[in-house]
Amino acid sequence: MNGLISSAPSQSAIRLSVSAFLLMLIQSALLLMSPSLGTEAGVLIWLLTPLALCAFVAALIGIPEPPDRHWRQRHGR
Image (cartoon, rainbow, N blue to C red):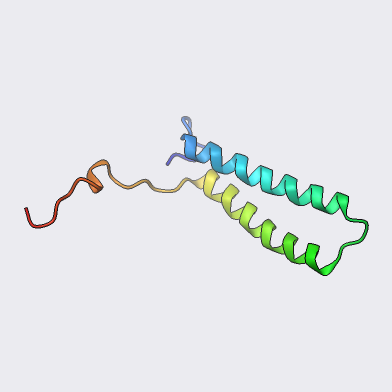
């Protein structure tokens, strides 16, 4: 997968960056809706933030794709 920094980013990279942005947006909306930050909200924030950050970093760097004929190989022939 080509990352977002490359000249032709792949659809997977774009989808990962959009999903990371949406996770951060949901986190911000939950913070804005709560009058005071409780323990449940704190746990949710601590779970969503690293997940969104990892998805965005993976979109920037790019994840290697398997070769085209990877699934076509037959064993024993």
